[in-house]
Image 1 (cartoon, each protein chain N blue to C red):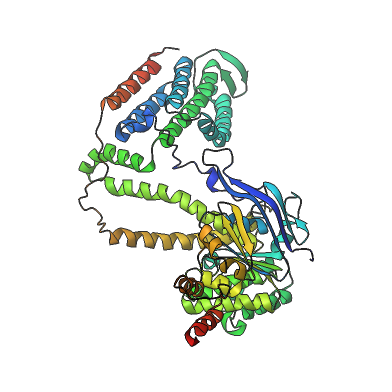
Image 2 (image 1 turned 180 degrees about the horizontal axis):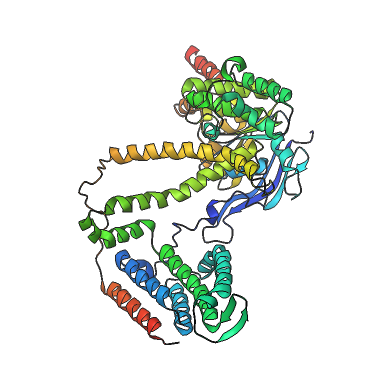
Length: 278
Length: 286
């Protein structure tokens, strides 16, 4: 109950846990590339052993990055409904579409085969692995590093006139303002609650009423957001920001041996995951 | 002594408990405020003032210790929180951000409507609250909120809280960011509410002139603890105490202490500008 208004506590985007581990110290470009390789491998890998291997690897990553694993586990909680719904749909309908595998159960159009059970288990594991990996990535990399890394990796796209820099800037600003707006919203909720507002206490079917209850928060929040955006523009222009102009960089990244090792290791792990035949 | 309207005992609060970012914001705070008193809460940023005042209307529930407001025990999970929030009006920092209705009158009426009062009563309260903060009901009630000046918006927000007719008014830095004229006017309004309407006022401020002018009592916080509690005369008159806790002083007190170090004999308890002026006159006449 006392955590009624503690919104900022539940926001994990942009949360960074500085433990100074080797994972934290990797060059963000290489780190990002390595994680992309791993996530792609997970997306393709559909064997039991391969996925169990991937989960073990994720746990190992938590360990060497010195991040307590409960951070990763708490990231799974909000995804559980999706995992369950997905599992039910796959269990009921996949067997009917895909042929092959031993049939365990058949009733009308519902057909449960060894293949559909495999799909259910494998996709649940994939979910967990992807959440674990992205948790390690965001918890071990500050948002600035992350966007720098992304900007560099997307760099080649500039040749086809893709506005890489603007894109990276948008992402940086968006992530930067998530906690700010969460704080503003918390303050607004408290202020309106002090005036007798209540949120989310009406019955869920009274959608119109519940939507109206949010107006006293949403409208001031928009106001504040617009005011902040204008302030940000002024602050950037006052520091001579010109869109599209050539810019030098404060952070220079230099790849070291450990960065190449990270890439090679992620390729090897992916190869093992995909190479396992069961 | 009569039953204090605000009775806080051994209150502690820890933010983000159980995470590496754990932070102890309040540490064993005890505070009683009598009805009709005007109390200033001062202290540096991060000393726990905001956390303390959010306990007063149940926005934060006590983790340990008790908070009893006018007989309502906030630590009880079943306490009537709405009734509590009607009795304690909390005005946040920069309250002008919280206006959301198109028209001034509608915004002030939000609280009373939420209380489920009949239209006539709502109208009466809006009228009363707007006049109290110095906004003419006839003239201002149909003005669009976005077209007001900062000072006016703040008055509207204050009226919105007053329309609940609270017994205790809690203000977090009520004059921060206002121009000198609006600041002076707002202070007069707050003083009026305290002296004439007999509202108990608790306010947080960094402006010591304000504290000296307004408060009957000063409560000084540092690192989540209460370090001293006394009348402004006791606090500002005690140079040692001020030094020890790095408490700012009003200009008038500053001058007196500087005169004293220069070797003039002054009464350091003369903290009000008028009294300080008398002290200086005494020296000049000698």
